[in-house]
Length: 97
Image (cartoon, rainbow, N blue to C red):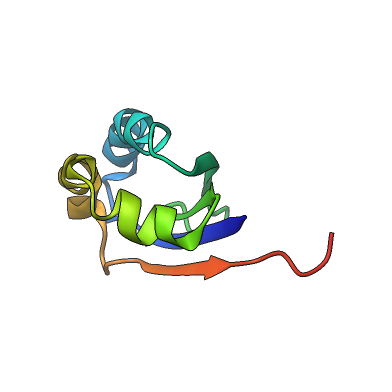
């Protein structure tokens, strides 16, 4: 199992619109092959910063399957215009239970 972590900085004044768009976008990601679950969390210190955590069966389910899918284009159109700067996305594996 792989954990994808994306730190999302949303343009000031657009957090409500981002959260509404994410409600639609999460339907896209949750239907992808290899998807396990996800969480979107808002930072307490900076209310325009979010952490998106997505668990995948394999790295390729995210990097090839999801990002290479036609559905990713819809995900992009729903969410990418909110980011400033574009997020850093990293993948993690569990070390200890």
